[in-house]
Image (tube, rainbow, N blue to C red):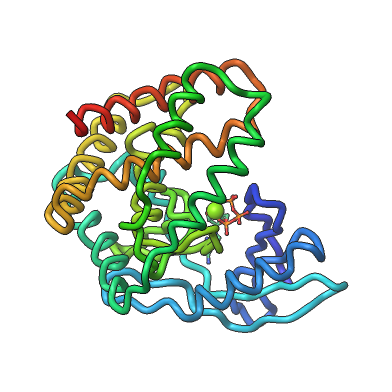
Length: 280
Ligand SMILES: Nc1ncnc2c1ncn2[C@@H]1O[C@H](COP(=O)(O)OP(=O)(O)OP(=O)(O)O)[C@@H](O)[C@H]1O
Ligand SMILES: [Mg+2]
């Protein structure tokens, strides 16, 4: 068997495998026994994902080796959406955003009641966790999050980690990979993860050769995305920014270098400005 390492940052191994009879597949192996359960639920979520607009690599088989869970899936010979944004024609961005939004929104049916408590608990433990990191910006953000009414976050299907790195594009078709369980499943969370990429340019933050054309494409992506959300939920679009604010604040406990901290501060402030301007 021929094996190439595809990398990955989560601690899992992602291997491109080719058998003697030229069968190609990707094997994702848990990084530790403690992570097995999360990877199992990832495989389950991926195999259950159905959408007219976006696909997911087919799961071929699952198993354990040396106590570690793994799953084999179809190899999608494309590029990540993050990379694709460097070259996509501006005119094609709308169709792409449309497919993504439809793929999440189609699963909005069968909504269950939102559980405000889950958010309150999360924000409480975050506040305790952030005692060390507390600065003026963080305090302001925590106050906004604490005073927010989270009941509009109805429970729906949610990819869990919908970044531009976790979408593969091949021949114009989108595929989701790297599904994740999250503390709360709501389509608003997925939109806010996308916004973390296209509003704060998080994945591109220290890319020295930041291409102005890519930035423009990301801005077009963001504007189309938010227009679609507004079309769907009207003034409730602001919930996306609350979710984004929560997302950004959750990064602080893991951040120690000054450069990332000041980048975070700046992004948190700009999201708070959007929220506060909407409130007046
Ligand atoms: N089925 C697949 N077909 C083609 N490429 C894939 C496939 N699965 C993973 N990859 C490639 O491997 C990379 C890492 O995979 P994945 O996102 O599952 O890894 P991770 O370690 O869980 O996450 P991360 O790097 O996002 O923290 C992807 O960005 C993609 O480029
Ligand atoms: Mg990934």
